[in-house]
Amino acid sequence: MAGLEEKLCPVCFQEAMEHGECRNCGYHAEESSAVKDYLAPFTILKEKYLLGKSLGQGGFGITYLAENMQSGLRCCIKEYFPSGLLQGRTPDGALILADEENRPEYEEGKQQFIEEACALQELRENISVVDILDFFEENGTAYFAMELIEGCNLRVFRKNHNPKQTLKMALQMLFLLGSSLAEVHRFGMIHGDISPENILITQDGEIKLIDFGAARSFRQGSDNKERKIYLKPNYAPYEQYTQKPCQGPWTDIYALAATFYFIVSGRKMLDALSRAKGASYPPLHELCPAVSRQLSDVIDKALAFDYHDRYRRMLDFLDALEQVVRPEDYDIDLRALMPKSKASKQAEIHVETSDDSEKMCQVEEQNMPEPKRLAAFFHPKKRRLAYLELTMRKSGGHISRRRWIIEPNRTVKVGRLATSDVMMPADNQISRNHCEVFYNEPKREFIVRDLSKYGTYLADGKPMEKEKSYTLKDGDIFCVVSPEYTFKVVIET
Image (cartoon, rainbow, N blue to C red; front, side, top):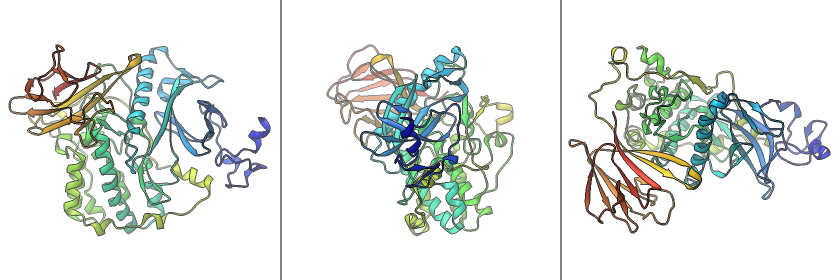
């Protein structure tokens, strides 16, 4: 094997290495950086994936180039690696916790890593979201395989193109990724780490969102345990600085707008802690004459400090954009602007970073709201949001949770149809239109009606009569099919 390793290229996986250079793709051995925490090149995972060059490390994981030895296709492997909880790994690749007291947090994160990868697989038809191909456990941790995207991130695109091209691209990005994220939100998840580094433009001119390592239900922790908070300060809204369950689609809306703000202006959005102390940022139209006052106002609302003041849903944000942006404003052939590079350079661009790149960092949890200091930002008399919280209990004792906002005085449909407001897993016992929920805001009540074949059940296990209305109060639960799918109705405190 030693002889093969000397000849095998860790980028194109061809036996073409000679004197440290690949004859096929141009890769040079000096491009590889040895990092003790990374798995060695040519490690085999799941008896199927041959690892190549490491592509980089974030707050939650390490990414590697890989080849599927069964199909011969290249892909990327993301390894669950919460660096703040670990001290390294054993010679055979198993991870070592820094402190055994971290075990519950580590295991919870690992399980969520797998569950979110599983959930994202159900969004495979969405061309603007990176395709998750496989997921598995090994070395005491978890991995998922995703498509290899060859292209550049938004920060690199901005450096290599003029302001007019960049603005058109950024507008196209808002509409394409906004539509994709609306689907992710409808599945009860948020991305949680939108930034210029995590949005790629492929060589075919497609815009794709990557790195769902921070993806989560917008439930957040419900057990009041302390958790480490990782975020990118210039793209994270204030609610991400707390473990309280106040994240939702508006969190991704803020990050998407902050990314647009930076790409168009070249100026990073002011971090939320500075805004909490009263600092303000210049509106986009003051920095960029090409941006209309109307578009700038829409971005400002998406960047509102108080999440109550932002657009509730991504579709609301997109509707507002459509009112102030014309199709010709984002009519651009991105494919024609993308250079055709050698394989090794493509892999570098996939994760290219620079001194000004935004990286995940650990932050201290903030107490919110703080009435004396933040009275101007958070208003306790504002409309309280209502949610559906789903707890799914799976074989092996695994538990996962998702959360959906319920707009007042609007019927929310629950089922496994792709058009359902609350899209359930592909379980044949769950009807396409299983039940519906209506939130009566003045009475603070939830009305639930069963529409299914296999039943919707009350907390005491009694089945609801089909199409009969049942009234539930804050904190009450009901089940779809069985206790495996338990919903709680919640009103924001």
